[in-house]
Length: 393
Image (cartoon, rainbow, N blue to C red; front, side, top):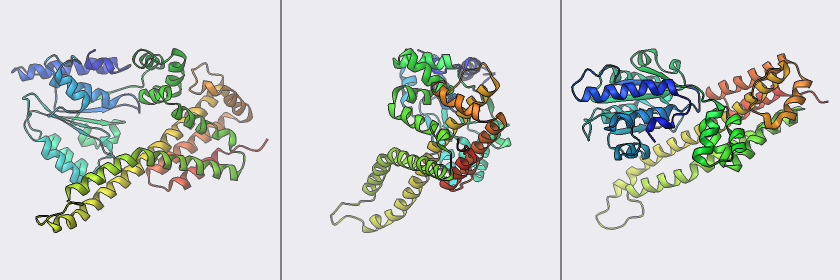
């Protein structure tokens, strides 16, 4: 299977990337390489496969057959071990200028294997203003064999000076049938479960895969979608907010705990902790305190980011729920993400007006904006649940 075959529902983007890969191969043999450029910006909604598209394109640049999917070059890209591929995954709230400058220095080197040096920058929109300015200079004056692949939700999430120097690849939300087909054929998921997961995930491939394969993920979704029916009073609203934030805390801790422990142990080992002997440099051990503090700060930022992502997933599930309520209220003949909770949708549609439903959707989106602006999660979610409150029957 070729590398571009993994891009579900992205036929237009695949055509563009295949042509660019052919142009890149032509350029390496002395041709003009029309259609190939040194900077690309992959955009699309969550779950559309921005990073997967960028990785597939990177493989096509390294592969002598432009992304065959089975050679050593393609395999190295798939597992992230290719010597000329630099993958950047910002794990904290932002990506700073110091990190960016170090990245630019690494990107300036000549390719090890003679074709291209590729930097795949996931979530490039997390770069700070200073980092973006440093990145702009690198894109304006690139080495001849360096290719930058930036990923962001939308073009407007990047500085206009950066996006104007990149070729844009726009991805779309994959259709539900295509996502369900992938789950059935590649993950051996029963068709009914695959259909449910693809519909509930609203085309988000990784989210659909988790819902199809992880019972705990389905349980968490059910808990979130039970919130609207429980908000009949102030006390219930506060309790629901506390439960949602606490669940996010627990999930973030579970995700980061093992990684934090391994990173800390490795750093302590590097600085000589636990070693002994006359030749041991005690100053080296003491010098590790600053590095350990810097690591702890990064880990704390990563935990905060993970917690926000967990809460945001829950908020998007709530948005989908109220959008379904609105569709029922208007009698729209569209597929419902929450078809499995049709009784709840019908009950809320009967007991409220479309105007109230729209106000509730606005309240959820406002909560997302507040969380992005570093508002305390408990306060932001409480304000949202109070806005979602239903009158007692």
